Each structure stands twice: as C-alpha cells, then as structure tokens.
Amino acid sequence: MCGIVGYIGSKDITSVLLSSLWKLEYRGYDSSGIAVIENGELKVVKSVGKLMTLQEKLSKERIEGSVGIGHTRWATHGEPSDHNAHPQTDCNEKFAVVHNGIIENYYTLKEKLIKRKHIFQSTTDTEVIAHLIEENYNGDLKDAVLRTVKKLEGSYAIAVLSPYEDDKIIAYRKGSPLIIGVGNNENLLASDIPAVISHTKNIIIMEDDELAVIKRDTIEIFNQKGEKKPLKINKIEWEPESIEKGEFKHFMLKEIFEQPEVIRRNISLRIVDNKLNFGDSFRFNKKELSNITNIVIQACGTSWHAGYIGKYLLEDIARINTEVDISSEFRYRNPVYGGETLVIAISQSGETADTLAGLREAKAKFLKVLSFVNVMGSTISRESDSTIYLNAGPEIGVASTKAFTSQILNIYLFTLYLARIKWRLEDEEINEKFALIKELPDKIKVVLNNNERIKEIAGIFKDKKNFIFLGRGINYPVALEGALKLKEISYVHATGYPAGELKHGPLALIDKETPVIAIATSSNVYEKMLNNLEEVKARNGIIIAISNMNDEKVKKIADYIIEVPYVIEHLSPIINVIPLQLFAYHLADMNGRDVDKPRNLAKSVTVE
Ligand code: AGP
Image 1 (tube, helix red, strand yellow):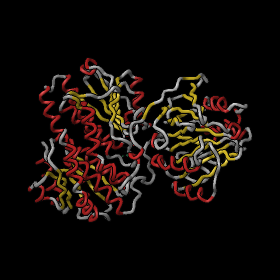
Image 2 (cartoon, helix red, strand yellow):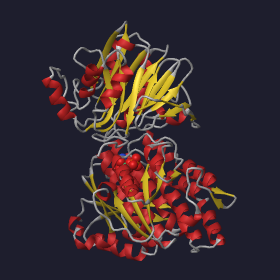
Image 3 (tube, helix red, strand yellow):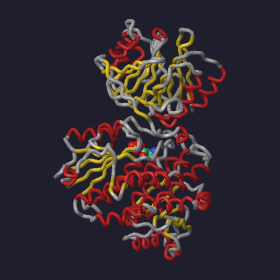
Image 4 (cartoon, helix red, strand yellow):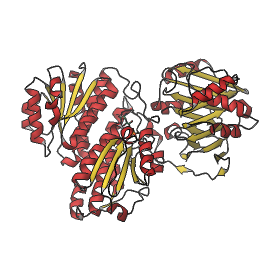
C-alpha cells in the first residue's frame, strides 16, 4: 500500500518523479505528491485524487531541482485530502517525509509533540515522523533519522528530504519494501522495481532495519546502529516493455493474454530434462520433505484460492493431509500441529501483511515455511526457508490473473515432486503428466481465442446486480475466484459456492434475474454438477456454463455456453479460470469501471 519514489541526478526532476509514480499507482491512488529542493528551499506539491490531478497541477508550474521524493497514497490514517497527501512536513517545512506502512504508536507520539508545541497540518500517522526528525536534527540528517526510527512502532518504509542537506535522500526500511536503483551519476529509490527499470537494471533490495544515504554518485547502507554494510547489487532480467500496456486497453487484459507465455516460461524453467527444478531459492532437501506428514497453506484473496486448489492436489496426488486458511484468520487462531508440518505461504507480491504475519507465526513455532511468490527478493520470499518463484513477470492490474495460473501450475509441480519423494508416483507417471502440462499453453490460447464470444455474453449480463458462481471439487475454488474477480473490478455483488451446498440455503436466491455461472467441465463430480444445474434450471435460473467442447449434456441445460478444451481434472482450474477472468474484465469495462485500479483497493496490501 502506498508507493514511494526518489530521484537524485540531472534529469528533469518532475518528469522522473511523475513517471516513476505512474508505475507505482497500483499501490495506492487516492492522493499523491512530490517534494523537491529548489534553490535551497523545500518545494512541496500535493493533490487529492488520482495521479492525473497531480500531473495537471505540476504541468502549470515548473520545478527545478536535482533531488526529490514522491508518493502515491492508499489512505490508512486520515481521509484522502490535500492535507493528508504525502510528503508530510515538519513545523518549518525543513523536512519532507514520504511513508508506506503504519506508525502504530503515532497517537502517543503526536500528543507528546503537540505538548512540545509542534503544529500538525494533517491527520496522518506519517506527520509525526517529520516532527520527530525536526526535533532530532543536530546537523546530521542520517543521525536524526536513526534517532527518530528508534521511537517508531509499526512497519514502514520512509524517504526523507531536507534543504539542510540537499545532496541526498535518506531512506529507512522496516517491514515495507524499498529498493534502490543504481544509476550512472544518478540514483533512484522506489517501493518496487517497475518505478526504476526504465533508468537502470541494477537494483539494491533494502532489508529491514537498514538506512540508505543516497547521493548522486554514491550509495551507502547502514544498520540501525549506524554501522556501514556492504552493498549487494542485483541485476534485473526483465525488460522495461513488460510494464507497458502495449496494444491492450488495460494491464489486466494484457496480463490475461500473457498466460500462455507465463505457463510456457514456467514449464521450461521447472521441467528440465524430465526432472523438476525449482531453482536456487528452493533449499529443502529430499530427506526433510519426505518426513512431511501435514501441510498448512495460508494466503489471502486470489492466492488463497490457489492454495485451496493446492489442498485438492496435495491430498489427492501426494496423499498429504492439507489444511488451507486465510492468513488473517490463520495468524490469530491457535492451530494444533501434528507430525511434521510444512507451512506454505502463497503471495504474488510477497509483501502481504497478513500472509507475512502468518509466516512469522509459523516460524515462531519452529515450523518449516515454503513460499510461492512472484516478486523476487520480497519480504515473504526472504523470510521463508525456501521459495518457489512464480515467474509471471510484473503483475500491475490490481486483479490478479497470470500470477494465479502460475501459482496453480507451480503448486501442481511441487505436488508431483512430493508425490515422487513419498513413492506415490513413478517417474513414468510423472513423465506422462509432464506431457499433459506441456499442452497447456496452446489450450489456454484456444480459450483466449473465444474472447469475443465471452465479451458478448458479458454484454448480455452487464446490468445484472447479483451473480452466483458454482463449482465442485477442485473447481470450487475457481468459482470463488470467478466471484472475487467480478466483484473487485465491476463492484457487482457475486458469490462463489460449492454447487452441492446450493440446496442448503442459496437456492433461495435463484430466480430469472440472477445469472448462475457454473463450471461444468469433465471431472469426477461432473454428473453431480449436472444435477445441481437441473435444480437451478427448475427454479428458472439463467445458467452460463463453462463446459468442454461439444458437451451435449451441458448444452441441454445451460442457457449460454463458454467452451474450453479438455484437460485432466487436476489441471482444469488453469483453463477454467480464464473465461471467468475475461468475463469479469469485459463486464467491468462495459460499465466504465477503472479495471486496473478498482476503488478502495491496492495491489499490495502491506497493512493488516
Ligand atoms: C486479487 O485479484 C486481489 N486483488 C487480492 O485478493 C490479492 O490476491 C490478495 O490481496 C493477496 O495478494 P498477494 O498475492 O500479493 O499476497
């Protein structure tokens, strides 16, 4: 939540800060602002509303300078407004601060600061940081920041700018992400790589409790005691174009259409000479995994749905007892762990606060943690014992699409790996499955080729106010995912249900106004699903069915059919979710929704 940027160098300061902020708008978009040192003075420009309003404001006044910071906000403390937008400043406008995260003890700090005659302009938690730095400044900004963070509780990333020391930006990370882009006679700071990739591919990923002093031609990293640490520079492999929309109207649509390539990339990285390879970040040895008797998967939102699919796979193929829980529940319950338990955390961003807290809970109980993460070097991956990366490339649309299908594929591959270790599958059986997996990219393309028909069907239902998504077995979580996609980007109410549960209550919702989207592809519960659809039909429900090609039985019951190619049941979620992603996309777009940046949401949820 919230995006931070910083720049020091000789390029046009407002355009660099703005273009970096545009790349981070997915992290929050209710207000934004920048601070630049212009002729020895701190110049702050902020605006409530989307980044475009700040851009319009900035187009009317030229700001000159070579060092600046910027912010795009997702409000936690204080409503979105000009005053609450960041940068926040101290009483004398000598220190500007941008912040991502939450200062949990801000109220107590603020009361004390007010008693000491500080005057507050905002209702944010962030402003206390600027006032504390003001008090702690004694001619050394680095020192003032180090003394300030000692008083802060919570998780945060901050960047600080002051005309007293106009040759640097000071950054501090504790719990929220920060990276430094290492340039040539210029350096950048950001919450995420897309903000700097068009300037440099050399990145330093800051760790918790590190302070950075970023100057034009030097970068120094210190620990919280102020001791210098060595620099670790990573080279980013992906190209700047991967974060552009290209010919697509929205990132979400682009990311849906990238899925054949994402799956193909994972296949070529993971299946090498008919052996599974999860890369260097996978550090478990076969011996420790062969002892696993229980698995607990914890994640949020779409990643939780992928985890739910994982439960079906791990139990059915590897025969390992698997629980799946929403992280915000998992972290506060007191589970009983039996036998050798492996905890799995799943996260696209690798920064989700609840998932991270669940991981830390597990580690505190000395359990092993494996994570499935998309963003390299993110906190969840760094704190896990092992990580399997998703290789989905940057996912910018708030609605997760390609990360979901690569989560399912990687969990499926890990399941095969475990099944082999535990002698549940022979090499030959695994090779047969590899052959089926390799057919996936082309089969996904077949679904994507049906885009126009899916759009047509979405058009028919674009004014409906309620939708029910039904699935059974491994496709029940896909129904949940279809409902989540629709509600988060179209703001239409949708609920996902296991079809067998309909008669225990939700059947009362069925009437001719409520479309039912049902996943009715080949499976061990296919006939059961048809019975459930008959129950809907008998109550005048309108059925949109996802079925395999030329399925005459489904055709007789459903009002609308979206055909998808046949794949084995265990892989079917990867195919079946794609029409649901497209359906949600088109329905939201036709209703004029801001598909990539739906209201009230942000891409990475770094607050509880
Ligand atoms: C997905 O479309 C959502 N925007 C959201 O549910 C997301 O999946 C959830 O916040 C978890 O994020 P993560 O995968 O980055 O941990």
